[in-house]
Image (cartoon, rainbow, N blue to C red; front, side, top):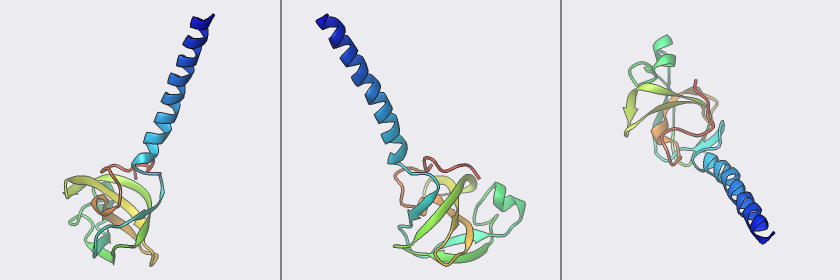
Length: 124
């Protein structure tokens, strides 16, 4: 009887660890669509360039600078896309709305997040 109770208890603890561990790690490097801080100054928010900008964001493919954002600003991140240009070793670009209401792509490198890919944010 003691062995059965001990086995059930260890199974329950292991199962709880998997459930809580999965939920905790999913939010450790992002929280999905929402507000994220910008850690740098003078970060360009870009658009234009037609289909190439939306499929393969980069400075060259999105030539129109809509506005710039600087720390401590927060931007609303809608989605992310692997771009045609890496910035700081990060290949992802995020489609954002700035505090001034502008929309466009910015390099994900400048978003305050612990990883390149932001967990919970969908592909564009």
